[in-house]
Image 1 (cartoon, helix red, strand yellow):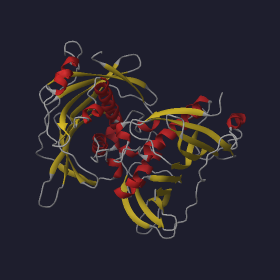
Image 2 (cartoon, chains in turn red, green):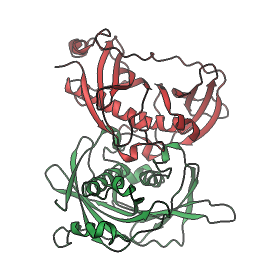
Image 3 (tube, one colour):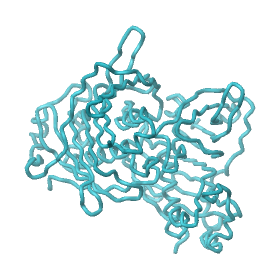
Length: 253
Length: 253
């Protein structure tokens, strides 16, 4: 089987924002579907993994676009495994227009966990290291965007607190990865989206659940115009709570 | 051209709720896509209409399911025009499983408006009444669910106020039809969804925009176990504001 998969997407009317370009959350959903299909076709999708009580957990996602897909546009997402370490695997994506021209790229990091203990597993030993057969050498398929950044919060400002509800959670009862992207982008004013998002990064740190109250903090980095967002749960007067995820949003200049 | 279209859908992982069944909002989105494609293929989609500065506006949607589509399921939505009046057209839907067995049905009401004046147009005169050629006689294709109900609020209780943000609005800058469904269902506790939704109805009354504060009221009807929801904007201490939409939610008993 090929190492690289192509996943076709179509940009539906309700999946674009007020500028007519796809929501970053919807694009993220397409990327996760492409990843899921790629894994499934090779025998280590979440369905197969579930038989041995394992599952994939998304740890990082960074998307960098030169053009966002537009309403009614047909695009293709290519995805492949860049590398496999003991506890993490790097999966990359290219988003191509109908002519095969790149519109942007994405990087992601995944861990595999034991569903019962919630502890990470050794990817090298899974299915006798079968996943290694599909690693695409960087030289053969470049993902020309920066790696995942590091977050250092020292001057973050509390900007919103919100409760999570029925629509926020997935089949596991966790607030879903895409909903965090929506809630984070909802922190920004309309003008920013008129310019468009150049790069979006997110690091998932802990799960939250239906009914959890999430607190959002923003730290603006004037040097490069990026905005770092930290999401915490269980924040009280006496406690800083727990970090749920961290994100970086860079709008076009 | 046939009068009835078939629109295939696939239930993606992030499109199901904690019970593993499709979110009503996502199903609603599929219905609207099916409607859009049906219109477009016959020459009166919103793209074509835009040339004469007209557009479709969804006025009512009622969905009644005996089974909800499940994660990874392939289903088909059939859609057809049931009737056309001067200012409204009735469009029906059947949701079928992979074996062609009905899982549920939906009814919708649409108006056509002039984009500039926002006033309704005469559907009989549009394209010389072309739409009448596609009306499917009720006797030939039954939609065996009740028509749209009437709302009478006399004892509604304020249950939530929320601000609308970037993710709520569509390409027209309006809070999108699907987001109302999400926000309305988010008013209910988890237990209700364990039983599942039997019927969902919504009546769209006025547009709201990014930044509008929406106020939600619930009126429980003990006689039939239905829950009526009214959504208002611009509610102040001195004003009851304007009705944006009204919905009825009936969970399985």
